[in-house]
Image (cartoon, rainbow, N blue to C red):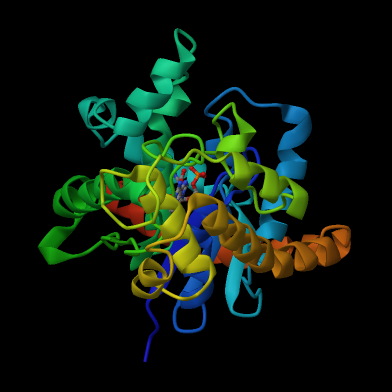
Length: 338
Ligand code: AMP
Ligand code: TRP
């Protein structure tokens, strides 16, 4: 039986944090044994905002190493760098020409990010979701495991596939590209900032205390959790709005301790913040330890990393080229000669 295919990616900008892990990467790891898994480091997306060219290549390699450190097994998953597969840029252009501008202008992430950029917003930032659609459609992905914040981009990819490609160019019910489904887990899909329980934990937040990075040292984790915003109530509970910091930190503890929400809600119902924070510090340090150890083992082995990314690119290119040819032909392009 054919296994369902998944595709996902993270940008190599800044350090990966526990939101990226719990919202996205952890799910890829859980799915890789039962699904055909493609995971890429989306470096073309990383240049949509101002970036440092001296760091891009290194950050790209480090991000791929973190995928492996989190448990992505290159024998089960294809791990590759987006820019190593040129078909992404080409399909992006084709989809650009098929997609109405106003579909992009209403993207929440574009609006939020462009406010921060002032007058220096690149066309690439607006185009970002189309590149993401190209990433997904090239691999005929059935499912795309992402955090909650990517839901709108996934809906756009579906609309482009269905309304702009298949129904316009697919003759007689002929499907040209597969329409993907988002896969957003109920737990961990939206990890919030440590300094404000109402905003998302994010790589780009200027205050590093707002997030726990996967490579933070035990001392730093301790310091960040101790400083994390709390409220004046004693006893922690899930409220789903009234106490955003309690919801967030208890939720993180439920996942990292492996105990689940019901158990931790009982365990912490009468606990003061000080005692709870110590539990959270221990659970966080413990769960990041194996990731950090694995990362340290592989990060300096350049040949090992290069080989994985080379094999990944070969496999990804062969799948992506097949899809691209199908789209080119449906759109009416002259076949390449020779
Ligand atoms: P990014 O950091 O924007 O490259 O996001 C990479 C992946 O991590 C995407 O699937 C996001 O949905 C997910 N993600 C990013 N931030 C969070 C967060 N705070 N909580 C849960 N998932 C997140
Ligand atoms: N836009 C995604 C994010 O910031 C990253 C991404 C790019 C992606 N291409 C993708 C995720 C394709 C899933 C599938 O989180």
